[in-house]
Length: 185
Image 1 (cartoon, rainbow, N blue to C red):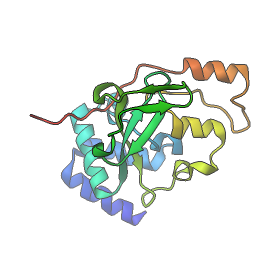
Image 2 (image 1 turned 45 degrees about the horizontal axis):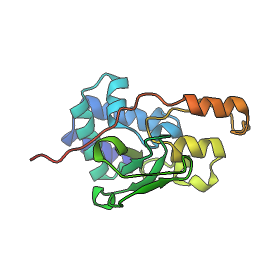
Image 3 (image 1 turned 180 degrees about the vertical axis):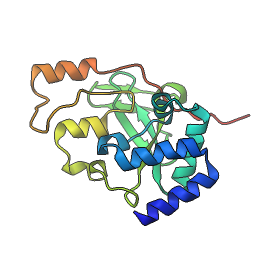
Image 4 (image 1 turned 90 degrees about the vertical axis):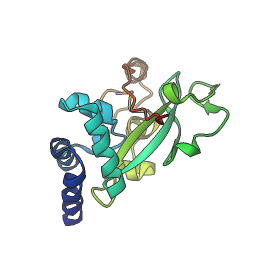
């Protein structure tokens, strides 16, 4: 954890100290699933922080190696992640297909692309770093759904085949706060 401590010390020099303290607390105390695909705008709202300061802190944290930044192409129908990339340039397909919705969608930056941050392995290893080892419900929660989906918490013995679980997944979609970066003109 001394490498992480050094990285957080460096982050304190380049970002708002209050936001850095909140991020450090998140990394130290949050459950694994909370460290996978963190939405900076949602994080700022939950912690009562300024959006721009939170975005800047997460961007600096990604540059330092505390987090991995991902550009996620989302399905507008179900909220699932259709593709993920480390750069916006990689979001260049004419159409993305969703196997769950059985539909294809043309990507639009303002509606289908979100930016999220996942804690780096070198800072804290989380279950989502090895998605093939996750139980099915956790795979959907941490890997398949975008940050705007908040499925109900279930035990690892629960099954997504139960009518209650299927209903919960359908109703879990809440308004999404997407962290969108636009190029200045």
